[in-house]
Image (cartoon, rainbow, N blue to C red):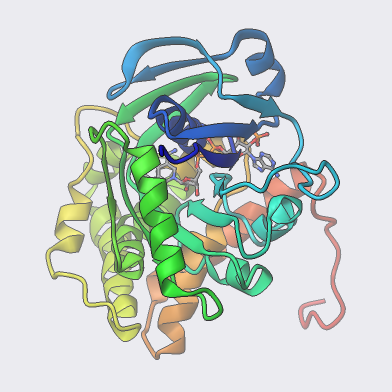
Length: 345
Ligand SMILES: NC(=O)C1=CN([C@@H]2O[C@H](COP(=O)(O)OP(=O)(O)OC[C@H]3O[C@@H](n4cnc5c(N)ncnc54)[C@H](OP(=O)(O)O)[C@@H]3O)[C@@H](O)[C@H]2O)C=CC1
Ligand SMILES: CC(C)(CO)C(=O)C(=O)O
């Protein structure tokens, strides 16, 4: 008997989430309920348009199985449990609500697998603490996709993902691995995407950080694309490369030995004939909050806790924290006032 379609709740219907929702639905093995926020009305009116290098350049008025404005409450609404909650919001633990708070009412304990397709390090930890009986699946994504205007998406670099279970002490390893494999089979049903199982996502996360912890923050501070940054030896020699070496050392101190050529390859990975801006730069240019803690703060703390000197990343982190406060103040999320115990009052 054919297996029933997986019930997937998609939380975060921006670039990564929309491409995931499209792959899951069109694969025929999943039905997707998408929670939308700023793009809800546009999508309700016109559906979703996608220009994709892998799925086709002229996808018009596509709609997932269901679209809603709020996170479901599975108990109150007496819904069938979701097999998967796919989280593709930006992960910004320094500004509530946290991912765990956002999805809590949709999680069925012991059943729903939580898939985190987000950049950064240690994003799984708060989910393990909050949902100890749910499998946690970690996806390290290399796609490039942007929502150009509400409901319209440009997918211009291949959907490549490493996906695997994240160890959670109260979940049988077999259960998490099986969930990860089922998710991948549904996502990559036609087998045309470079989306594969990876038993060691910790390695993949540190490896990706060599790029994300260097290019993302520096591009956000300078508001420059990566090609222009590479035209300046100062930017690469004084900022990008030192941060990459600091991340390599922090990874090593945390038991992850990355190949020596990773920094050199990461410096040159983007094409030089187009002006690509990493997501953190795109966020600040839109006046959005940045993923500072998961992409910079966590690897910095992880390295320094093991005695690794990370002076360049520490400086960049301080600058980013200041930039984040400015964004928060503009959004009414920060009151400029001294807190008790501040020695600089
Ligand atoms: N884009 C890319 O090419 C890549 C991104 N990544 C990573 O993937 C993750 C997602 O990135 P990306 O798709 O670019 O992000 P986007 O900013 O494009 O999308 C995030 C979406 O989440 C929505 N959202 C945020 N909070 C909530 C909430 N509480 N309830 C419902 N919806 C919410 C946002 O809605 P709203 O518009 O209302 O804010 C937005 O639609 C990030 O961790 C990023 O670093 C990794 C590789 C490549
Ligand atoms: C560079 C990229 C698009 C790689 O997938 C990314 O992770 C980001 O911009 O944050």
